Length: 370
Image 1 (tube, one colour):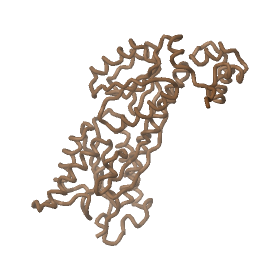
Image 2: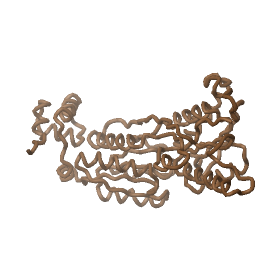
Image 3: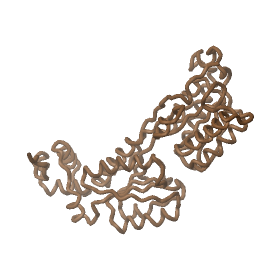
Image 4: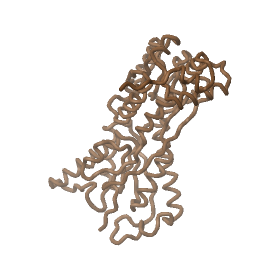
């Protein structure tokens, strides 16, 4: 049985306005009374009306296509964001074009004018560099724009991002509760607010817990029988890399060689994978009887690992890896919804939406006794 789809006539009838008024509201006209605009938007939701993207493109000159631009084609974070954007866009009659800048500013500068020339209806973007990326070509062309994960300093545009200060705080709380005392934090270059905020949140919360003398954690954190982690919290050490797997592996190899740290917190997913690779490499060397080799992640007194993002490998490896989980799918859905609103109401003030992370505790940070 064919189900009748709501039409613009249904919206107009529900809102008590003309179809011309409905069309002007849907297409973002600025000269519509606010009360009429509110009634039309309410009627659109009530009727379930989906504007025809192809028709809008003929009237507005924009294509029935939105673009997602990311800096890293291989990063699972972005593949999941793209998947959610595509699902949401299809439901509104749009196709999705994907472009990857490969962390290259020159490539990024080439992409923006190309999107404008294609008359893309809207863009969801993660920039290469928060200070040096220039979104002026998109803004000057009036292209609706939503940023994901990274800000652009000086640009007043919509942003969807994890509450990264909270991510760092939660990481510090979890590690202290599990009895760790000497953390090393792996992070990216200075100036990237996502990882910088995770580090800031971690350091502030670690300091707060230390100043409280562990009272916030309860006696169990310090006094567990046979625990090798009893004692005061020591100042974390921060090591910077380039956010890619190799830098995470190399930094962790240096940490393991020094032997000071009892846990590694990696503030992005690629460095997390590199850290685990280094620990497993040393684990295998120990199993083979290499002189002086420890067995990371497999016994008391050896480093734990707290990763970022619930990538598939973190659940499949042994031991399984605890993570600070970003709400990635919610990020994609929220960015798509916000872009749709921006396309319909271009004059609205930009907004920043913070999404809450959570800890998924697994074996790599679970308390080990004796």
